[in-house]
Length: 533
Ligand code: GLC
Image 1 (cartoon, protein in one colour):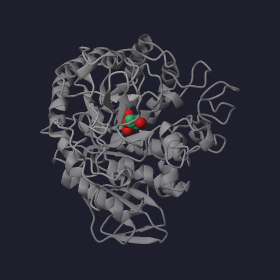
Image 2 (image 1 turned 30 degrees about the horizontal axis):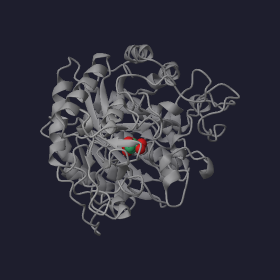
Image 3 (image 1 turned 45 degrees about the vertical axis):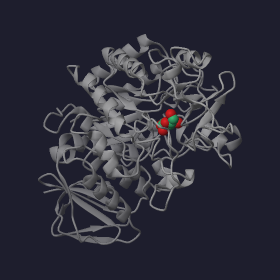
């Protein structure tokens, strides 16, 4: 079933993508840190699962102030992860299995130890000075404007040696590049080509909405009630430091490069915006991003009404032909089996069903396929700078980044027994790939089944989507394509739904598969089905 061509349904990136947080996926050399060779050794799992592409978190050399999102060399591989030869082997080995490899590109900022920044910082007259955003202090010595860092505090750091401030939208160690500078744009053109030439199928682009800043660096206004919760936390609306019109020109330029390859490369953006009309604009006229992250969905509650609202706002906000992305987790947020489902297996199965049956690309985070929840991380031992810098220090994003649970053995199959892992391993005895693979009733078997069904059905992979109205509260139902319906009961009450029917092709209660539903569909609490007429 998995070998079926995707052509009828659309390009490969309309399928199922899988986010490999490399540091925590598979460790081939026992140093407690995942690496490229470890990933290569686990490709068979991903091929069996049926994913079309993987997005690998940053592999480039980095001081790891923000775990790779602080790049010190954009055209190399960090030794702890492997080498360029390993990348070539990864691309080839994944390709043999029909899997494309996307890398993570971090263009908004580099590490303050990148040679570009070291040069830029060395003197006001350095040719690279203008590659970053430098400004004089105000008359009283304070920062040039009121912008705040996403990681708390002012977004400006005074460089004593040259007497100017530089901008850092995240950590001080992550200096913002100046995207008004043509040399910066040209340097990134070359970075894209460098990886595309090696067979990298595309990029997930970090904070893609932020790159170009207001040329006058005006103050942001205070946040108001109508702003996103994150802007209310920061106390200001991101009016001048995000989503500037010129951002789109940079992305169009990259799209032109991506289109120059015979198997056109794919641009996926981390569009961290809460208004889907603004996100939708990043698809351009099909000349900007191919895929955009749907942050309002990620932050939604797991309730029928809230999910319906987000899906409707996505449909309304995106251009008609744009293809949405659905993901329930990432390395930046609590895992959905914990956040949405509280570890309840029925809810975890429904959440996977939601991700894999909505019209759009399903983006799984490593471990989602086994319903892996957040790991326990002692805040005192947190590795995430965000947690350590918070007003009340906490484990930050670490619980979502603990090692993949492959087996119940010491080291969880992630690393060799006895190794010290960079983050603690979660409850691998209770939840791991190996034990779930042999169990037809497991979350993993369910996930595999949904992906297989999706690949075999043009309705499910490419069909138009329309909600069925008038369903009971707590229930969501929609039609996909010609003959497929999906119904989910996201409530503690049993429900009866009129107007959907057919044979049960997939059911969270697997024993229902094959049953014919005529006229009315009865669902238990937290039960879902896919029906085929
Ligand atoms: C993105 C990444 C996050 C990182 C931040 C700064 O949001 O996903 O992990 O900390 O950008 O690069």
